[in-house]
Image (tube, rainbow, N blue to C red; front, side, top):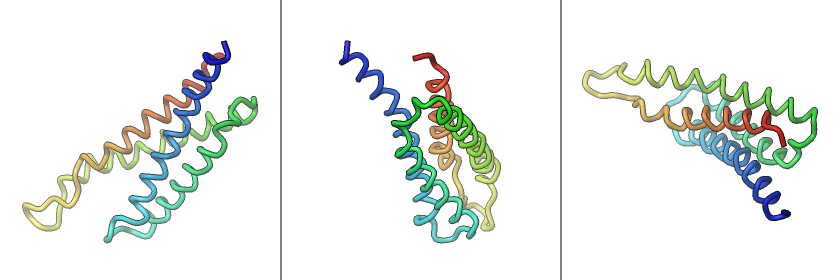
Length: 130
């Protein structure tokens, strides 16, 4: 019985920790990888890194009733915010300054789509009865 409980808890933590790691990865890409990028995007990358770290550190505490509702709100905002880069990568990818050379690619939206799905998954796992 204890092993089943621990397996359920680890599966639940895995969702939150995976989402936090993905946030750190995406934030690091925006903060450190792109050479030509707006300062606002770099600041959002730093914010994504911080949110990912907080998500990982607070994941064991989501059993608390009040923190659970705060986490649902947080993951909902993360999912909502991911809609902006997803749509922009699809809209702006074909646009370029040099004819025949694409500066963006729709495949850059894939990490944001995965993060959107993971955030929704976290919300559903927080709503699920224990």
